[in-house]
Image 1 (cartoon, rainbow, N blue to C red):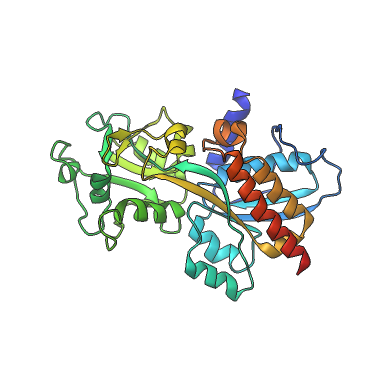
Image 2: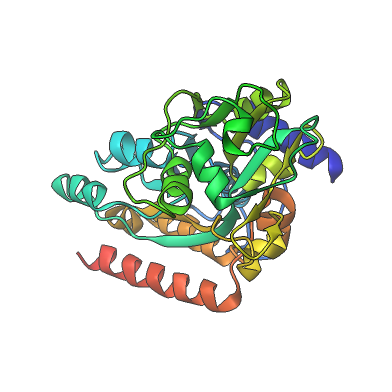
Length: 331
């Protein structure tokens, strides 16, 4: 099992664009059918969030293991990049997102006759990381984090943020502005005190979380942020900071994200199937499979590193999905 998880980790880390015809790994206790040879066939195109990408990869691999006539094309494009360039133009069947779809994205979809169906699939703990040698900092306040990433203040050294920190240049790594993680960070941190504050642009921006890990690992004075799943696979390479939202520092973990203690950086994760695509049996069955397994500790928590849905959340999401499938088939 350890070797299988390692190979999956390396696969996800090495992927930069499209993964076609996924190879099959693992099995799950929550099967939605009796296995392959059931006649399901077709291609499923998925783009969007790099944060949700490892979860969609895990679900896709397992589904294909049960339904070998179904192929997947998976892309890690960022939430916004996926909506703008793939989903709303009608080029993909699903868009993964680490924040809710925005009104302008809904309008762009509507112009092309694309109706998104919002499905919550997990909870993430957005994680702030520093170099392992950064022994002067173990926690950071929401205010300090906002100052550090402020496009208005743009501090140049650690000491500019906190006088007790080193007078050394900040080296910043984070997601690009196509990322839902970037959007969420702005709302949760930068807009916590002032809704007009912008995100600084003098940083190393990327849609590849492994690049953020590498950058922070390589510099004593670096800092970055990303989804918890990528940090959880690299805890030996970088250090996560506890976040102080006014009630004392809280470390990111599945437990603190689930309880809500890890505020304000706990967040829901989504996938958005295109309603009309749900009229196709193989796409509807994959959407059902994902929600059926959204409560799986084995897949969502142990393998990928997010908080699974509870039974009530799963039931709510399945009701929304079944209603959308029924509407897709009746139109």
